[in-house]
Image (cartoon, rainbow over all chains, first blue to last red; front, side):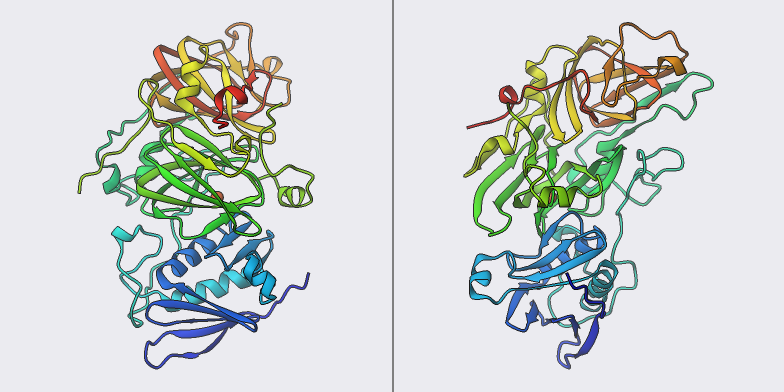
Length: 329
Length: 163
Ligand SMILES: [Fe+2]
């Protein structure tokens, strides 16, 4: 597979809206007051700007996550852990049949830099795509003053467990993370840890719900605890996952509070397969051959279990591993 | 606007729905409280399996056996209050199996490290090198992140929604 190493180029600035347009490989990116326009030699796609920016900043923040990130049914990225594909129509039956799809591969840093450059130019003060829609302004309209604070934040990755000495801290008032409005009805207390002399620091526990309730971002998992390559991620979810995720491995959802509705479709064609509504205490696998998108009517707490074993993506892709996790026999 | 957060409990939970034009076994849809409600105390019933890794539901009611694993495990309390007791394992007592929790015959005679009292939403480290016991006078529920091991119970056909 060819890897294109030419970085993002600025093409010009729209004199009316003030937004810049860009080229990366054969893809061009332009925005107007309401929409992002992605074009490639044989086609183009229009994406509502809020959706586009919510997807783009998460895609970079996640380091392109596991597998496929669809901004919509047509446009997205695939992570190869070192390189990243940008595709248009490659996993859409209509585009494939018409022969207008395009996929190009870049070093991951090139795509991260490109997406950050586009986001930086297209996001103005007062709008933060990591926040829930009720907690931020709107991205529509002409360009305003550019934000100067970091676009990406809150990707907390514990090495062993949150809150251990020498590991990442849990969120608190002191770290600038008050309890979110949607969890203000909950009572939060701390576990009691009583160490015998000589064992101080060896026992550990946190209020995980308190940590999640203080998250100021949505659809933005962070790592809470790690058993070998098994990664426990937690996240608060409100409104909609602004991407459709097609994993390159099996992943698991554990609904900790409230409910999330998941739409499920075939990973390769996008053909709908149905839906799963998860309520508190529900556990559901997301197989490796589907794509899924979540909808949370009220801010909800979700735990996600990922297997971070290196090289799993090629073992699933080759068919060595089955695209579903449990053997019922 | 005031929000009302819904969490589940052993005696009050509502399972969601799965409506798919696909083999439902691929999704292994279960509910932690339903699994704990039907389990014997201290069974470690797998509800998540990711190749070698599992998450197990445990109904905690009374004093559990002592367990130890050759790696860190993590327990999240989902209902009730659980006291976790820890004993340091001597080098000769460390588990020799590959992964997951093993059940010990009795409380190991190492140094007492201390205890952790945890309630709903608390996540507790079960550190490598320690044996642990879970205690609760009233039925409680823990979800344990670990490796598929010698006492992991698999009853997927019983716990999963299949139609
Ligand atoms: Fe996902």
